[in-house]
Image (cartoon, rainbow, N blue to C red; front, top):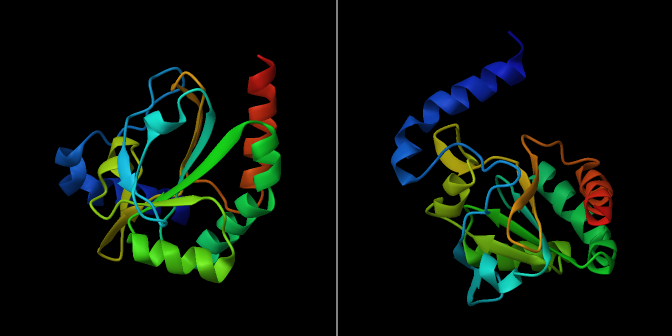
Length: 177
């Protein structure tokens, strides 16, 4: 068994304690996107319903200031104007605090919203909770949500390099119908 598969299996086993917090099955294409109401780095609460009528790239990531998460955030930032041209917004979610997100955005020059989910409520609803070295956090999963609020595309255990470009390509295809 390869190391990646073993790691995934161990993460799933470790999630047994999170089952009561919500579903650990990611929503599937065509299903309504689970609602959330989370604090943002800028202050205030952000709800999915705030973006009804828009495409939403909802990406979950493990931790601010780590190499993979920084690379993924930089790639989304690099492509931010392309997402805006497509009428899409980007929302990043992790178990970090809003203050950690403020610091991360300031240090890395990020201009899209990062949402704090330290209790892993939305993370769990999107089937993206995991445990690493005894710490509960978000797995690197992304959900493309259409303007009607339904899941249009699911990306599980993504690689940070090249992910933003793939989401942009898929968004263009989905918008063409």
